[in-house]
Length: 92
Image (cartoon, rainbow, N blue to C red):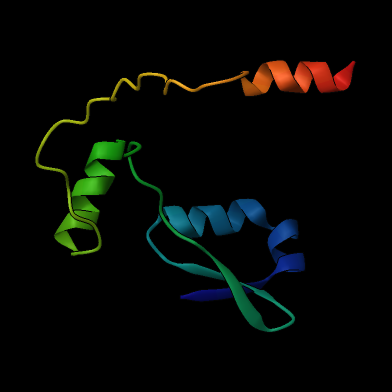
């Protein structure tokens, strides 16, 4: 594991990207305190589904058992004026 300050990272970014690409973790520090990590990236981006499955395997989420279907809501009948009409009247 390599530790590097922000100023040195800015000056030699390519060097530290190469280091991370080779599999070594680079810890970025600010005034000696770790604030970020630079690690080797994935070959491709994971899909949302793959990320959810991984979270489910860790026990952090529960996947739905049925497919999601949006519900259709019917307007609620009301007596009197509509709120939108009252707002328009109030603005006049």
